[in-house]
Length: 440
Image (cartoon, rainbow, N blue to C red; front, side):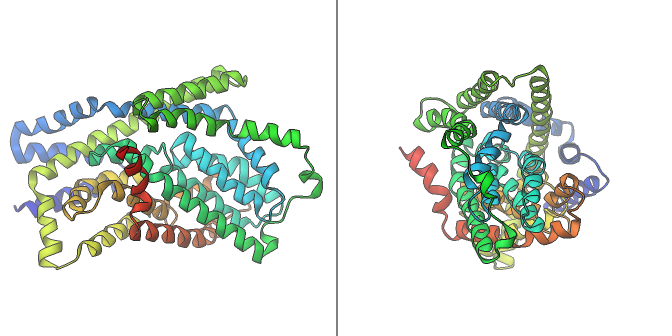
C-alpha cells in the first residue's frame, strides 16, 4: 500500500470513528497508535509514548490551567455583572449603545477567559435579556451575542492558540500578541456595523429612557472602576510579560493570583465559587491535554510516512496550484468542517497535514495561526450546522427560534469575512505587534 493510500485510510478511519460518537481525542489517538503498530510493529508503540513525554516536558502548557482558572474565578464571582452595568450606564445614551457595550463586554470576557463558550454563556444570560427588555431587535442582538462570543478564541489569553502553539511548535506569546490587533479589528468592525445600522434603522437599537440615563457622575465613576477591574488584572498580567520581566508561565500565575485576590477583596470568594472554578479548570485542562497528546501521536505517524511531502507535490506539481490557491482551499475546508466540528477537533484533525504544508509553501506559521482562528470563528456561525448556532439555541429565551438565530448571524459573517480578508491581504496586522515586542 502506498503512503498516500495509508494516509487516506487513516483519515477515513478517524472520521468514521468520530461519526459514531467517539470522543475526539479517543478517535485520533486510537487511529494514530494502531497505525504506528501496524506500520512499524512493536516499536511503533514508542511513538505515542514519546508524544506523551514531549507533552509532559512542554513547560508553557502550565499556562493553560492558570488562564482557565483565572477566567472561571472572574466569571463565577459575578465580576462580569459589574462590566455589563458599566456599559449599560456609559453607552445607554447612544443608539444601539447597549449592543455596542455588549461587544465591549465580550472583548473583556475574552481577555478574562480565552474560551468562546464563556462569552456565549455570559452574553446569553446577562446581556440578551436586558437588550430584549429594552426594545432592541431580537434578530440583531442575537447576532451580536454570537459574534461577540467568538472573540474568545482570538483575543489573548486564547486557549485555542495555546493548542495551536503546541501542535505547530510555535511560541505561545507570539501567537497571543498576533491575535490582539486582528481581534480588536474585528470588534471595531462589529461596533461600526451596529452603530451604522442603528443610525439607519433607529427602531433596532433605541436609546435608554431619560430616567435611566440620569445617573450621578459619582455613580458612573464607581461603576467605571468596578467594570474595568478585569482590564486591570489583564494589564497586571501582560505588561510584565511584554516588558520581559516575567516569563509566560509566571505571568499566567500572576493573572490567576490577581483574579483570586480581586474576588476575595470584593467579598465574592465563597466555597462554591472556588470549588466550581477548580473543578471546571481541571476538566478543561485534562480535555485539552488529551487532545494535544492524541494530535502529537497522530502527527508523528504522518511525519514518518512522508504524507505531507506527497500532498504538497500533488497540489503544486501535478495540479499546478499556486501557494495562495492552496491556502484559500484550506480556509474553505475549515468552514465546511466547522459545520459539524468544534475548533479543537478541526485543528487536531488537519494540523498534521496543514501546518507542515503551510510551512513548506513559505507562509508564516504565526500568521497562519491567526487565519485558522478567524476562519473557525466564521465556521462556528455558518448555517446550517454551525457550532455556535446550536449553542445559542440552547441558551436563548423561548421567543428566539432557530430561524431567528440563522437570520441574525448573516451580516456578522460578512463582517468577519472582511476582517479575514484584511488579515490575509495585510499580514502585518497580525505580525507587527509580535515583531515589535520580540524584536525589542
